[in-house]
Image (tube, rainbow, N blue to C red; front, side, top):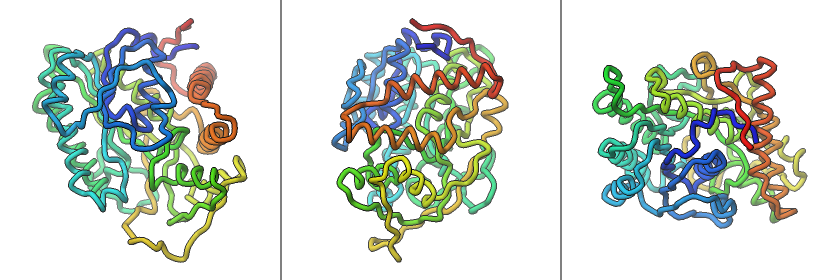
Length: 375
């Protein structure tokens, strides 16, 4: 496997919160493949099957609720991490209406606990805190939101993540970033759009609901077929997280800021178009659109786009896979899992790295990293 982070993460001690979740399991596994020593902190997996359990990655794992500061701090003190990737969250919009207190306690107080444990640790030098594209005060614009646009959030989930962004900015200014001496903790926040990919079995998510229905030969009921989202494969934001983490490890203070990560120069894909193409990839996927959701109708944004100019110009990041390729990889991951008992995670990571290097060699994306061979 060829590596694209110049061995930055080899032998680093890294905490990943939320490692049993969808994105967290992909990130922790990729770090292990790079030779990192990873400690995962999370609640136990809440679905069966689950990606974390299937991977059987060689990581240490602690089941800790991030709302429990004492246990969290003890884990930090014992492990002595160099860098923290904070992904643990209550990540579901519709659940946030049912459990708003849990949502705010996890996403705001939990994040504060992670920052406090990092602040009082003698080893942590860098933090990458993951939020969401939904942190913006959504005006249903036709253009993308920039990192300097107003934060907001209609539903409790979005609002809680906007609160987490404000919290991180306060800690950055109040406790971290001592650029004059080179000391302190460098922290970035990352706002990524709707992420798809194999291994997600969460409730109330479009692709997981569709593939679970396909496996049992049932139709998928979609609530808002005309809604537009910034669809991207899970490896796109994780690649960005790792790029940003690399810059922070290199003590580059200018990267200690907020970043948007999403599709670039793509046509708008509606929920209906995503499902139609998913059917082309796996014919078992069929959809139904009811006249009205039988459950309580919660607010959901119809248009949401990100402006990723900052990441392109300053981080040297652009997507490797377009939406069509992301959907193909995602649906085929589930199809192979259900029909052939095959796990495509490692192959997807290898393909992603290979195609990223190819795009760099063709100057399709800026080359700002040393490419090295990793036997």
